Length: 138
Image 1 (cartoon, rainbow, N blue to C red):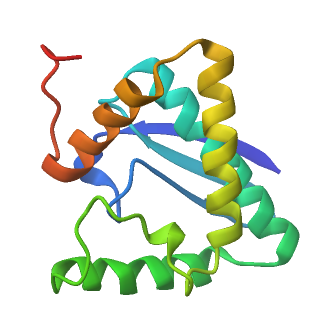
Image 2 (image 1 turned 90 degrees about the vertical axis):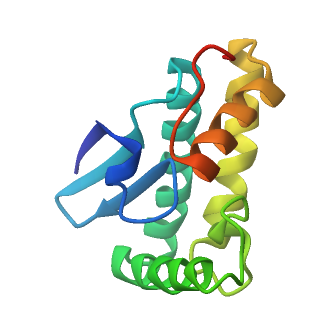
Image 3 (image 1 turned 45 degrees about the vertical axis):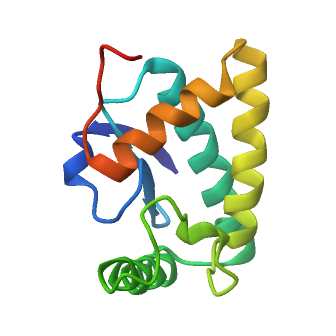
């Protein structure tokens, strides 16, 4: 299986996210918001790799996950959730186990890189909530 990592403008994601993946038997694609700093790009890639690996291992398809994300997106639009609530923690989420382990791995990678979790997380939250970053603050 080929693995492709793609950096895209945040606004081009299909869902409210900083990272997204899709796979078939030949290729795994990961899309990451281009606006975030290099450390956050590494953390998002690490998160997505663990999340999708758990899904592949458990037979959970891209289509199942995208269907759930589309449902959750409609719930964002209906005001049920604010954009700082991640779909991956919802108990209905098919990729929940992978999301939880991806988040744990993300924190480990942050520690290995000597990153400031609060600062890096604040950058991600700002982009998720507003769609843009105040680069002067970061």
